Amino acid sequence: MRFFSDNAAAACPEVIAALSAANRLDTAYDGDEWSKRLDGALSDLFEREVEVLWIATGTAANSLALAALCPSHGAVLCHRDAHIQNDECGAPEFFTGGAKLLLAEGDGAKVTPESVETLIGGIRRDVHQVQPHALSITNATEYGLVYTPAETAALGELAKRHRIGFHVDGARFANAVARLGCAPADLTWRAGVDALSFGFVKNGGLSAECLVFFTPGLADATRYRRKRAGHLASKGRFLAAQILAMLDGDVWLRNARAANAAAATIAEAAGDRLILAAEANEVFIKVSADEAASLRAQGFDFYDWGPGEARLVTSWDSDPAHVAALASAIRAL
Image (tube, rainbow, N blue to C red):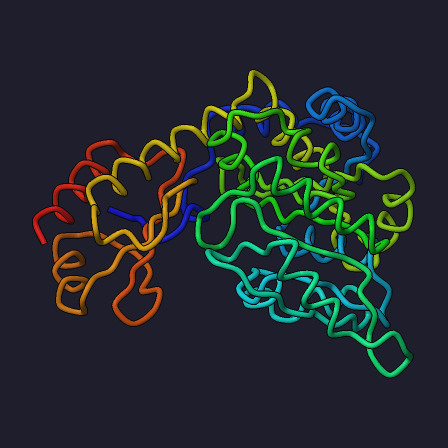
């Protein structure tokens, strides 16, 4: 009974069917009929004209987005616990050609305008220090919290005032939208966002992520960077087909709602053990080493998140029986 990571979830049936349908002769790279439909499909979703690139991994999507926003001599502002800081093996620095990550504070891995202003305020405006060129947030965050439209817009206003780019790592963007019930536009361009890494793999995709540019021109050089980085898949139709299949009929939202609902069941069972509100599909609880061993002995798989803490992650295909069993086991500790 696996609650280790939503990366381990199966690909949803719609994705598998789309791959089969795309398994025929067509133009190579990104000239196929599926890739050509992405701009229109995502423009419809976000209610404005956007430019879209498929990418195989979230790490590459984040790093290519930041390379579009930040020069090699600049700095990217992010949370101390951001995925781009702790879990991408220096990829943002590599893709940008050496840009520095500057780390802000905030509960639940959420930055605030105040914490970002404090960070910017400590930078001298001279050539001896890197200057800020981009702000990157994660929605939902690495601790399962979501940025509301108002919170995102406040950061977008700050980015505009300081004339820096604004990127959203949306590995679990679907979970944030499902939680809030808002329009995707409210968490992106309407709030001042320039680029979004729109995650599909954690939400039922197989091997496709989506890089969405809201600011005209940013995609131009990124097409070359994608090729140079080795991420221009020769059979790109298989990536585009996955994304289109999950957009069709709002499969992406259906899957995210299922994952969120499973997490809510576990969070309710956790009671006072809950470390942070479970706003998306991650649940963080307090457990002793013996209690964690007891849960594992019953067949539950999960991450140890720190001394006396565990992370439980649900997915679109979490078995309701397994979710109920885990909830019961936590209550019985």
